[in-house]
Length: 140
Picture 1 (cartoon, rainbow, N blue to C red):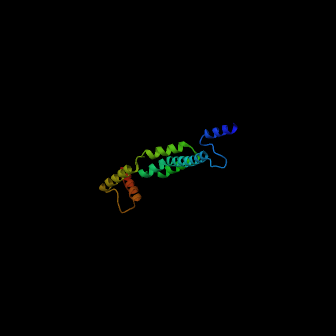
Picture 2 (cartoon, rainbow, N blue to C red):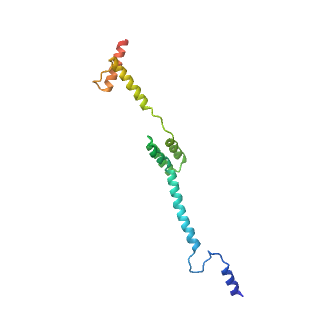
Picture 3 (cartoon, rainbow, N blue to C red):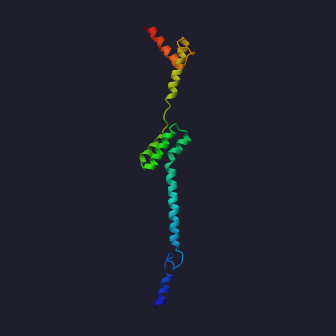
């Protein structure tokens, strides 16, 4: 009677119950799944982490070094505020303040040249200093 019960139990056992000395298929599948999941999630995390830096590279951003430093700080400190700051800097384009100011300076210099106040033979700092000195002496 016991032999028949055991044979019946073996026939109704789930697939992952193995006989002694055989390979445990469920354990092997779970190990492969965990290894692949760890590598997949690691790759996803690192690609998501480098998103601000890749955005800055594609947009040819002027603050690429700041964005790179912030993403590295976020990676090593696990502080999401650094990553968020890098993402905001990568997305928002900082306005170019230097070009309009340089254009204004060039226009003022051209107007001063027309009046004969600026002499181009000297260096740029000497000519501006001389122009300011001449204007000040005329006013006095």
